[in-house]
Structure formats: structure tokens, C-alpha cells
Image (cartoon, rainbow, N blue to C red; front, side):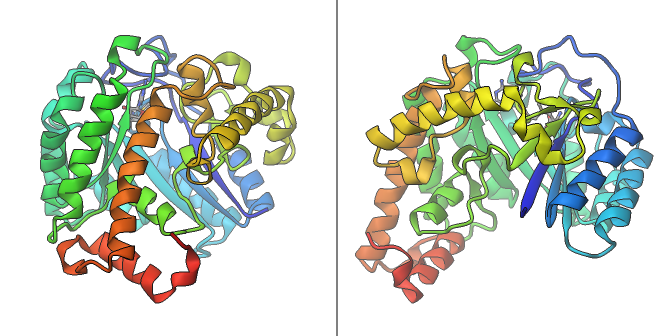
Length: 377
Ligand SMILES: C[S@@+](CC[C@H](N)C(=O)[O-])C[C@H]1O[C@@H](n2cnc3c(N)ncnc32)[C@H](O)[C@@H]1O
């Protein structure tokens, strides 16, 4: 087997209580045990050529640095030190980042993802602390990080301000809409057209920013998909089932890091001898059946299927049913993707002056022009 992405929830506890959290607010403080993690790391190393560990939660920085030191030691032991078979990302709300943590991540080549909505950070989050100060410290120290902004109905109109406070400051940004799950209510979910229009507007700003130093996501992933890139990195559009797994503090395994209902608990880590055993369970079968049904409808109905792969099963569930499409996430994808495809087709077929575009799109299009057989428009 090739590669597995493991989303670890070392704790479901959190220090800021986001109003929209898909895990809700009644989570125990318990932390994952090193024994559980040792088994996860061992099984991943025995079965897969490479693994990406995403430390998530809850708030992963509620665990002390010594926990993460231990995890790196275990990964070195099982995957081989310096073997390039394993990579790590810590996804944090940014409130607890300090210089020691930043130095540790740099030393161990750990990607840092910070959930942050710039000037709108207090709209969804109850206690925000001074995340901006921590990000400034990271920037000043030359530490790499990127920002994920979760957009609700209220902040969709402020996407431009969020873009300016991140991308314009050289901080890579990924945008995603709130889904109606856990503590989130339907009122928090952005209006599909309003979100898509705002997303297109920041894409246009970024596309024509010849000084842009960082990518904008998921837009850049869409550009790559349009240009025929076979190695899609966003889980929502790459048929994620059996390629991603999530470990909870009690050792329960779930197919996804987004808050899953209890019936999607696959099994416990103590119940299996191979990580992929978790994918041969009744819970997984139920998820497969519903997802395949949705994807078959998408394949028949939608010309974007090859780029979208039927979207995210958990998003579909939060929008009514895992076997149905055409919810908010589907409508946003169609509108944003179609716009970007129009732009990219125009650039490639019109042989437009590439110096008008940012370097990410420019390089991707040059790659396509140098190797035009990758895809035909
Ligand atoms: C659950 S948190 C866990 C990791 C860490 N505490 C953090 O804030 O990044 C991970 C991400 O999930 C997002 N998230 C939580 N609930 C969501 C929902 N209902 N819809 C969309 N994204 C959500 C958060 O905004 C955050 O960016």
C-alpha cells in the first residue's frame, strides 16, 4: 500500500470554544496515551510506504511539548530516522504558540497550520487570545506556517479583508465554509452564491497579483486539477475513503477528521492488527454504500465529476444525506471551479501574456504549455 494520512486527535478538549465546532462543546479532557500512539505509528509504518500525521483535535497544543518529542522519537524508531517516509502537520488555533514550540517545529520539519480569520477571528471563536501576536512572532523568526480560515455566513462578506491580512502579508491561506455539524447551526452556514462570489473575487485578486508570494487554497488545487495534475492533495475531491483515518483520544478510529456521528466509528485500535482492517468494518461499508450512491449520481449528472469526485461525504451528510449531492458545498464548488476553469482555459488557449499573472499560476501554465499532452481543452 502506498500512503496514509492519519489525523490524530490527541485530545478533544479545547481552550477557546469555537461556536461552530463540529465536535460540539461537551468533550472530555482525556489525552491520547503513548501506547495507543505507538500502535498507530507501528501499524502505519508496517503497512504503508509513507504516512502524513496531522495533529488536530480539540486543541493539540494543550498537550505538552514532551508528548510531541516522544511522537517524533517513535516515528524515527518505526519509520527510520531521516527516511522521508513520514511527515507531520500540527493544526492549532494559534493561541498557545510560543518560541519553544516554533523552534521545535522548525527543527523537526513540522508544518504548522493555524486556524485564523484575521480581522474576523472573534466572530466564531469565544476566546481568541492574541493569535496575531503569535503569528507575528513566527513570521519574525522566519518560521513557516499557513492559515486556514473557516468562513460563516457573517464573515463571507469580509473575505477580502481576511485575504488582505494573510496573503497580502505573505501568509498562505486556505478557505473553507462552515458545515452544519456539532455546535454549528444552519444559520452559520454561508449562502452558497454569496460565498462563491466572495471566493471568486479573492481568486481574481490573487490571480492578477504579480507580487503574490504564497498560494491561495483551494483555488490553486483547482488550477492544478484543471491543468491535469494527477496527484490531488485536497481530501474533499480526491476520493479520500481508505486513504485517510482519524484516531481519537480513546483509540477509536474514524474515517475522517471532521466530527463524525458515532455510527461512523470504525473500530478501536486494540481491535486490529493492520491499520487497513479498520476499512473492512460494517461502519465503513455503510459509508462506502452511501458515498458510492452519491458519486454515481454525480458521475451521471455533472460534467465536473472528474475534478470533484463527488466531494466530501461528511459535508454531504451535514447537508442532508451522504447519498445525495447538490448541497451547499456542491453548489460552491461548481460555481468557483467553473469560474477558475474559464480563466485557465482562456490563459492557455488564448496564449495570453503570462506576466500578468501570479507566479504560481504562471509556473503551472508554463508546465502545461511545455507538456501540452497532459490535457486537451
Ligand atoms: C476542529 S479544529 C481542531 C484543531 C485546532 N484546534 C484548530 O483550531 O485548528 C480544526 C478546524 O476545523 C474547523 N471547524 C470546526 N468546526 C467546523 C465546522 N462546523 N465547519 C467547518 N469547519 C469547522 C475549525 O475552524 C478549525 O479550522
